[in-house]
Amino acid sequence: MNSIRIATLARLALFLALVAPLASADNIKTKDGTPLKGRCTAYDAGKKLLSFRTDDGEELQFTLDQLDQRSVYAVNASLIAKDNGKGQLQLANFARDIGLYAHAGRRYGYAEKADPSLKAEVERERAIGRKSAAEYCMKNAQAAIAKKDIADAEHWLTLLVQKLPNEPQAAEASALLEQHYLKERASRDDELERDHDELLENDLKRGKQLYDRMIERTRDGLTAKSSGRSTNLWNGAIDDGKGR
Image (cartoon, rainbow, N blue to C red; front, side):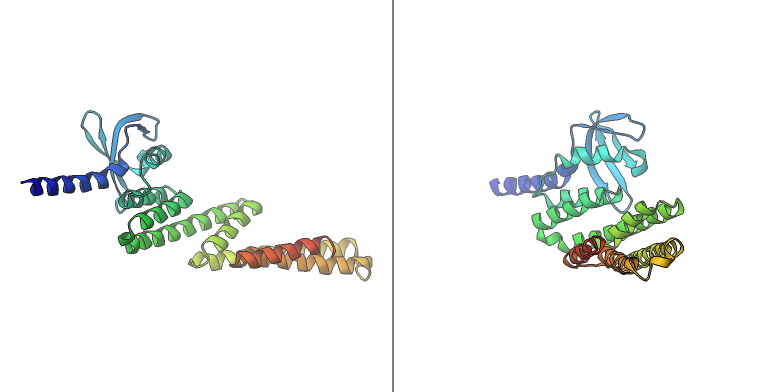
């Protein structure tokens, strides 16, 4: 009898361990700011649905666009133990689906460490996250290009190349960065030739060579997949800029 009771309690404990990660006694908010008191009980990454049980016992489901997404993440992130693999996996998927890619990456690591048996599932979800993040970066870069905000476009393209080098968008990002630096170099060449044509054969010729090399090193540093190579190239670009 005792063994049956122990087994029953063990199953109950396992069930609670899987559900508890998304349980919160704090308020979450809907998109319009309405607070909800109760508990998040599950997140379905396939359907992108959050299940919620109110303190009155009402079972609700919300799509992501119905929620103040960050409030939901913040509440549950404070409650899920790092050693709860399933809970961390659900939270990682939620973070990924609301665009918190760095948070998602960290949570996937917690899930895999807490429960090595989840490794294959975690890697599948990570792959979805990488694809989504690459699409997000490229979308932002293209929007910035359309607005002629070159600095912002460069930020997103560089992020894509350096953080997601194996995604298809990284090759396009690298090509766009290459075009940007070639265009900048050509523009600078035109300016120098227009304003200082008579001096190019003397002091400015050396300066132009250093400038060209600085642009090339900066471009290569942004598109390098190795952080060590990026650092060396950027240091070289700085030296060129100082005329060394």
